[in-house]
Length: 404
Ligand SMILES: [Zn+2]
Image (cartoon, rainbow, N blue to C red):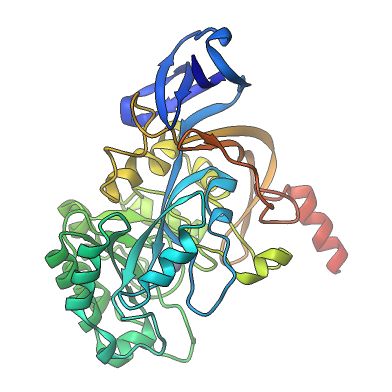
């Protein structure tokens, strides 16, 4: 007898090359069978998922679900409430405060990993004296089930203080620990600071090796993948050719329709779909904009990626990027039962970029059901007043008319 049977859906599991009408059976915390027409009588609980896409639980390589001294946090708001079963927090804690990070994140149903900040406890302003390679290596070795790598940012306030010494420290620590680097590009912070020159971004990219991740490749901010003339940095192409993963996380500032198209027209494509979602205390009042992974995925359908591409960029690809391909990112029989059931909804959806440019799109993706380690997760509070997906064009037009 199976504990749970998801019946009648279309399984898309790019790790196994599957895209077909199949049922998925779960026993305890593992996937026990994926096959056509598994009889309903063989399961204690049956969920009808006809017309839905049944994908492996989604994996976010870039999220923020813990911030020191800024509680409370809701890691599941970036996780299982919206179809994401595994998150890598991007530098929310350093080696010094990983214990508190684990206290916060272990309360979540979502599995949360850490990219340790290269700075000891992510104090700002950044300070060279807060770089402690030995502490990172030691903390990573002591917490192999949590730490997946080291986070660093190439951005003006840090670059002003120390050039790319912190990137050198991050790569050194990651190499010693046998882990990967997650490197942010794009000039966040005060507009008064000088822009990061392409030469410096290139030097930082040159330090990355196969398996490292560079995030925000579609940022419209200066200091990104393109030089001020809109030309791709050769160093980014070389990094990609060495096996560096390219991630287009949006956050609040890092997606531009024209940038995405300019980057892709020069032959560079994203490997994963990270979010840079930031779970803020204001979330309880739904005041903070949160763009979940499925909502952001609709942008990639609009950019021309297929549903199978999008599922791969949210499952098999990030599993590989985080070194989790043997435990997550596929519906392989015997694997942990992490599953995301997706509602593909036709409509007229408004997808807005960081410059305020919107596009009307015919397809949006919504979370229908999340299973984490065999357990059905209750849907939590929605990130926007209008729900889990993008707003409709009509809703946006009504708000704009109201404002006039
Ligand atoms: Zn981030």
